[in-house]
Length: 114
Image (tube, rainbow, N blue to C red; front, side, top):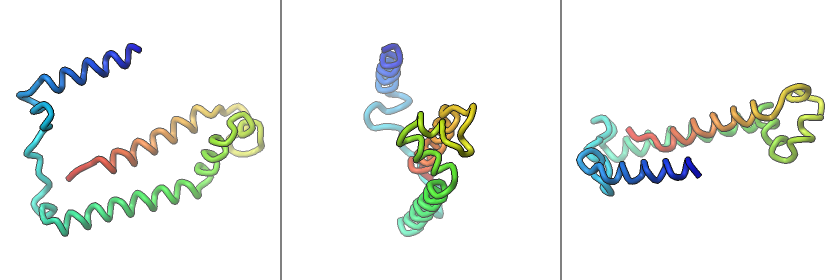
């Protein structure tokens, strides 16, 4: 409940600070580098980022880490009891934390603007 209150407080501070954030209009005048201001070049940059992200996600899902993530998604208790690189004293927190970091990196790449 406290995190919700802080989120709402930050929301109202950001939208009230009109001299810095321009309220609902957002921060403007952030242009990409001169080369990427051409729509065709910007399209190819975006296409390259999307293809790189898709290849990275495919490699991750087909790696042993991806199989561990699938197993943990299906049944965490069974995954921790089976024989494999994740069995034994390892808990699923480490793998879930790593998957959260990977997904946040992909999310940052999707939201980045040149």
